[in-house]
Image (cartoon, rainbow, N blue to C red):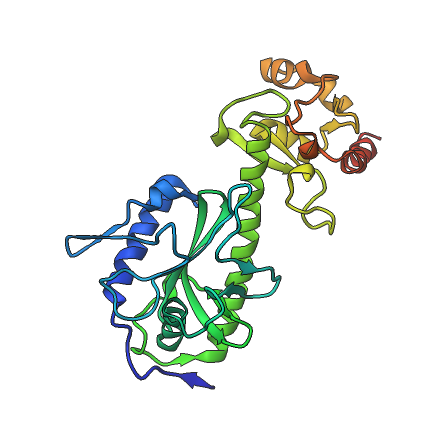
Length: 315
């Protein structure tokens, strides 16, 4: 089988390990999406504070490191601003990251080339909204294309981490594994961003019962994501608490095209305690609460199709 080895090891491996360990702790405490204020806490290596990234630069290496980049970052700019670094849309097993500027030989872009040559693992801070990032690590620069001013970035799993150059690798197997993991990472990013955007649009309240606790809310798809029209965008979503999301997905609760809540006869005829009476039956016939912005309202055609499914089950 084809194998690849490196002629030299990453000189910054201990620093990368410290960064990854701290990032794992931050995501354990705060969840998979991290606000910039949390990332600015940085991490400690041998008693010294180092940073994961800087606000101004998309390609970053702390001054204490000598090899390739520690992190890359894409941002969702605030209204009226243009992102300085951006990834290219792709549905396959890679992210395509734009270089800084038009010179592949400048210092920042050479940090990418160096990371690729060393096969050094880095962190990809993927922006999902202004000031909010989904860190992906370990990530690897798998291709550096000076002609198109892009590099290819692939994710891997933490159990694969080992100092570069210390073991033989099957290059083909590595690429297949990383391609699969990258596709899964993209799906998670889309769903996490979908939830974030839907909850913001609904002011972090359930569209049915107005429960105001984000940790108890989910972003429900109107058309399922397996449907080609079921894109993870706010007009295809509803902010629902766990109870109402479950009832909606089971077609025990429907929402008409004009936004009225309707319970199935099965639920209406059930007599069993206060939850049914107050948390479900009390909302039968009531309107859902829509976002303030009309462009974020549930799309009527999507509601109509989903409501037809509800009626078929009821029949």
